[in-house]
Length: 388
Ligand code: PLP
Image (cartoon, rainbow, N blue to C red; front, side, top):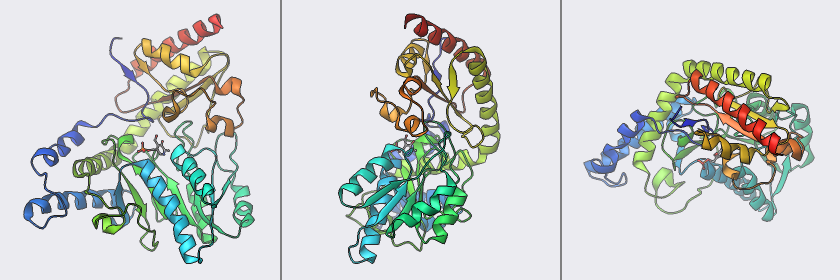
């Protein structure tokens, strides 16, 4: 097989051809600034509002509740930092307290570190061996600090694919009058989301994870929440996120959102079948391997494993020489040999955690590729174990 086999869709996805095509005119034909008053600018403005309507519909929100950002990291920073500022503002400067989990993306974890440095409290909810929040501990964790103002729990995990019990967490947050934010960067476009049903107050998403371009995303903010502005400047995004809009990016994200939702059911069934086939082969044919994450509540495209006695980093490099792109742990922490914080949080010791390989499938993968990957992985693991 001489073409590249891309199996790192949790890191990023290929921009869909329909998306590129829709974006193109907004680069060189309709390049007007959406804030201008003439008709040329109106064209850009209308394209932005069209994308906003599409995206709002996909999560059962209202268009005015969608705010365009530069991606998941910015959306997460905005939600957390400004929810805490809002609490302080409403409570005469009193510091708030955040509840989150130890398996979040660094966009959340490092925002929490920063908030903690500014004297905001942070607690981490317990997760089980599959990385799911232990619901029976949540009520107590909320009660522990009377100034708890926000609960932020990811919709689905970027390393192990585990889907969190968002509906129940949303219900608990509502009952206890906390703001509820979810980082849905890995879930949006892959799972049906309903912010009304699940009592979600804020939700982060990123276009490049579902066939859209890089550097654009959105934050959903429930209308009733007076979340302060994050980027100060002009009046864009209702004066809450200033800066000339990334018009082509927003247009592309709208098209990607529509396509992802239209194809979701059929696509996830096909990908789940391929994922299960590959996983079965790996678990049957390679000794000393475990699949990480929850088996039932799991993104359809995620197959993550830990192989004993090897390093995932070296395995990914060797697979690359065979034309296969996979990730060792999280793509965002590639380059670091530290154990993944997610794998540590689910109780894996270093011997297992060092051998983490994350395979995430996408629209273009085939069964033939799964067979090729299973064979090459078997070979790479055996070689590495022979050497070590
Ligand atoms: N949150 C999660 C769960 C992610 O997986 C990622 C990216 O991998 C991000 C946030 C950051 O998103 P972005 O790359 O758009 O900044």
